[in-house]
Structure formats: structure tokens, C-alpha cells
Image (cartoon, rainbow, N blue to C red):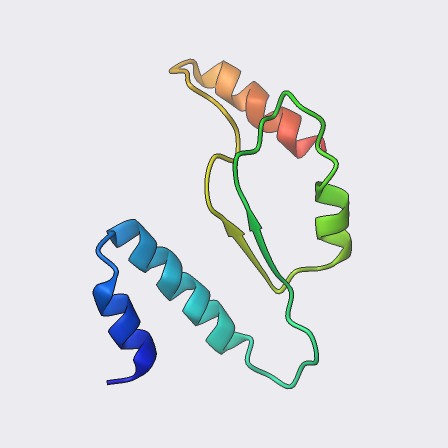
Amino acid sequence: MPMVLLLLKEVKSIKMKSICLLILLALMVSCKKKENFTLVFASCNDQNREQPLWKPIMENKPDLFVWGGDNIYADTDDMSKMQSDYNKVHAN
């Protein structure tokens, strides 16, 4: 059995297995002759704070972007507030 499948077999969390498989798939799809591969991990994006990292992330044109957590903090059932929070992030 290939090593990757053995490692995935040991992962108990369905969410983590999904993330690992997604990364593996992206790496396999992007396996072409290329000198550099840019992988970006991000999480915990507070829409009420400055967003200084988006510009350098976009300038580096990542081959794979893994969002590992909150893309906004929206502890609400109010969909108009949530939309407003997403709009703040999108404006950056």
C-alpha cells in the first residue's frame, strides 16, 4: 500500500482526511515541471482588523491555498450582518 494511503488510514478525523486528500489531489494535478511550488495556509481572518497579508499572497500567485479556519468571525444568525462581514473582507 502506498505510504500516503497508510498515513491517511491513521488519520481519525474526517475533516482532516478531507483536507489531506484535497492537498494531495492539488499536488498531483500540479505535478508538472516547475521550479517553485507556492503553498499558502491561512486561517482566523478577523474582518474587523487590517488585512495586510492579502496583497503579498496575491502577488506570489500561490499554486495552492488552504483555508484552515475562520474566513470571517460571524457568530450570528443575522444574514445581513454576515453578508456585511464578508463584504469587509472582499473589499481588501
